[in-house]
Each structure stands twice: as structure tokens, then as C-alpha cells.
Length: 363
Picture 1 (cartoon, rainbow, N blue to C red):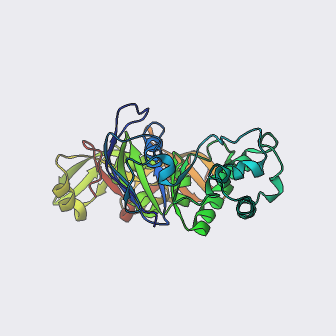
Picture 2: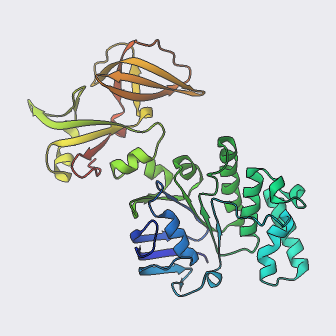
């Protein structure tokens, strides 16, 4: 069993990116992604799990074993770094075999495992080549192969796809996800790329300033962000945000901004119970806005088409609303002329209301 658990883990001393009071549990055979901007501490967490750094406070468990005092070798983890760190003077075959040779594994077993790993990763034809003869994607496969060949309890991957071009990153995302399911082992992956996190993970832990801000499935993180930080960090194009105030008129409750007046009477009691004050920020994702070419009867925002960003199956329309630009994601078949007057309506079930003071979710 390779469950990983961090309990009240803090690392300040000597850490390039410190972390504070981290509580995290990764289930056996689960793919967990630490998603965060650079400098938020995700690499520090991986290095502490691997035993390359020691926490100032807290406990780290692999399986049911407390590993704080164990050496990296005794923890039985394997780490893949952003840089491939291959031995340039060794062939691919010898690079793959190096962890097993270090453990004095019998040669016949080494040969068998090298063949198996090369088949899994599709690099059998590269075994006699040297790293200088490989592409970036091929080197990354070899680096991953060297990690998995000794069958550790936990795989730790620190932004391994960053140096690849966009097309290859997409391909390797799918390959890594397939590999993890095929191996059936625990994998913890660190990245600043939200598309990697959303497409690959069983669970995601979003970090900021050394702390875990939200933990859940891809769907939970995307559809139910707990803060403006999470809402803006996850999702492309980014979520639209409107500063507004809560007001009442003739027994009805409204969220008012300088460009709309939205009736939220059905949410009024919930908003008041969960937040003090009258200043809020309303968030709505570009895919949760609908465009109308005639003025609708329901609550709406009026604007004009500013620019179109075609993206194949979808098009992102930048709508000029007052002095603001609001992004709307629609099917690629939609065509509108620049300057066309349009109206936007909300999917009311997909709105997010945040406190302007705390930046945390209200409803």
C-alpha cells in the first residue's frame, strides 16, 4: 500500500519556497497534482516526501510508516525532475539500467526490466542511442523510464513536461496518465499548468504562498472555487470578475455594478448569513455567459463585440462593456461583426459571489 500522508508539515529553514501547515492525503494508486504558481512550495513538498529536505514541523507517512527519519533510499520513492538529468556518456539502455545496477540487481533481471519499460514507453528503438541523439520528448521518456524501472512505492514528478513544446506536452499528458493507470501506483505531480492538472489528475491540491488553498477533483476545483485566487488560476480563458454592491429596492435584493443590476433575491438570505458588509465580487466563467443579438427580458449586460479569438471548435469573444472587456466562450460556428451591439445573460446556476474583503466564496 502506498498511501502518502502529510500531517501539519511546515518547512521554513533553508527552503527556497517555504510551506506552512500542509495537511494532505494521497490515496493508494491515486494521481494527485500539486497545482500552483512558481514559488508556492510545490517542489518543496515533493522534496520532503522524497527525503531530500527535512520538515521543521509535522509528520510524513508513506503507507502506514512514519518516514521523517528515513533516508531517501529507505523511503522507496522515485523522482523525475524538470531537467532530464540523464548520464550523457551512457546509452539509453544503460541509463535505464543504472538504478538497478546501483542495487546490484542480477543482470538477467536488469535486461528483462529494461525491455519491459522500453516497451511500455515506446522507446525500444532508442536503447543503443545516447542522450545527445534524442529529442526532448524522447529524453523525457527515458527519464520517466529510469524512475519506474525499479518499481518504487511512490512516483514524484516535478514539472517534468515544462521543457517540451506545446504539441508534445499534450501527447505526454495522455501518456503519463495512461502509464500511471497501467502501473497502478501512487503518483504525485507538481505543475503550474492548470490544463495538465485538470486533464490528468484524480485529485488536485491548489497552492498559494506555501499553503494548500483547495483540495478536490478537477470538477470540484473548476466548478466550485473557494476563493478568487483559485477561480482565476484555474480555467482558460480566466473567469470574468465584476465588483458590485448588494442593494435593496421594493422588497427585492440586487447585486449592482456599473454595468448591470442582477436580481439575487433568492440568494439574499444566504449571502447575508455568510458575509458581512455590502461589497462583493461576482465571478462568471466565459462559458457560462450567453450572447443575444436582441435585448432579452431577463437580467443582462449590454456591450459590443470588440474582438474575436477563433480557437477551432470554439471562439472567444471579447465584449466591450463600459471600460471593461468581458470574455465569452461560444461555439466556433458563431460569427459576429466587430462593433455589433449584443447583450449577455448569466447562467445563474454557475455564478460565484465572493466577499470583496476576504476574497473567499460566499455563494
